[in-house]
Image (cartoon, rainbow, N blue to C red):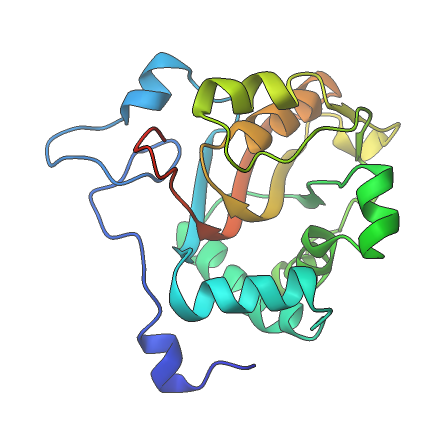
Length: 212
């Protein structure tokens, strides 16, 4: 599966207005979504290239579950353009890590496959060992926003990467739903010495309950 020009033009996007922090759709006249007002995230801003629908959902599922690894380069190219348009002052790229068990089962981390070409495209280092998942967590699927935050609380730890000290980090994952995973990972990076964390994902998904 690849995206032709017409397919790229038809990719469903999150359209303005959006939350200044997490990029969620918000009513006209507001600055922050309800979730960010209640639980301000540790990342400075997060944005997604597209909605988790149609061809984008299919592409992520092929990358994640069907070993179509070449799709990572295709999707990373879109992330490069997105980050450049946002003009974030990022100095390194870090992927959200998988737990050891899931890494063994899948054989690869789709976020890392996105992070490497993204770092190359931006001309900054990929800090491969800057973040580790230190606790196995159940799938977030089916959990509400509060349960998702509890599920990933304390699940990450920054590695002994001296380059993190005072750095502005770009955190990468495939999909953002409530932002709980990105928030917990950003907290770990800040605890490890990062000055600021931005986050980018290929897609934005929403809970069916309407809680985001």
